Length: 271
Image (tube, rainbow, N blue to C red; front, top):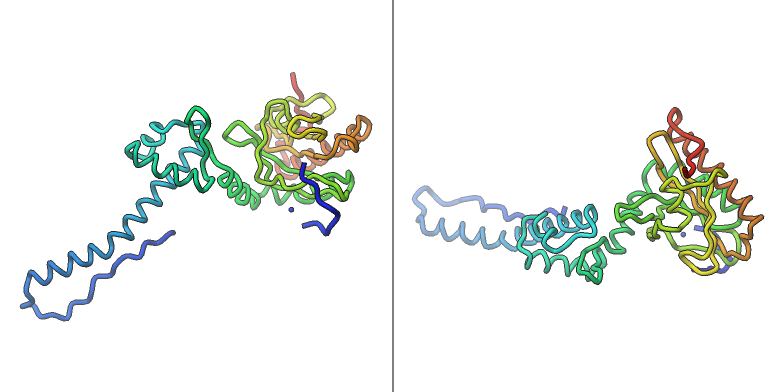
């Protein structure tokens, strides 16, 4: 768990195309000179065109990895119509920049930077704007850090917004980070595996001696996201967890009613 001391809260390419030179020569200009000029123009524009193609291919590979992970080298190459050799060269560059990662079996996954940039983009969407006041209220009321999370295509949960807690020792720095959905509080909430009380409590799963309490933002079409309060287990004992859980569930319902006025649902419980 990252801890901070008390402080004020805050946590195309357009390729340079060579312009053809305006001709000042008369109609009697020597043809070979014209051919030489055209060749020079093509030569000067070639580096820019090559760079643009490389960027397009790299972005195509990144998009495929983000949408289809885990994915193999051959699948990546086929998706963007490249040879495996060229695809591997570009993927290694993306891997070096942390845009993609590779597991022990050789399959490719989105890297930490891909998730981080995705979280920044998601941070501008409507759900975050609606959730921010709720996160602030939770952090003030509970004293613990409050997060908004959504399901990622990788089968994980990704945190996309937060409000830091008010305690001098508090959980922080997880915006853009992913956590497994298996046996985690936010994972259970996102998958609709919520008890009748409306919230999930999980202790020491992702981090030792840390308790997470989550509730789903549910509507008739499914679960849009989840709120999650995270703090040290010694403060979030069973009695305190119950109080915090009720607050988290209430704020999640408030967000759902705002986002889906005629389609929210107050109960999403495991069957």
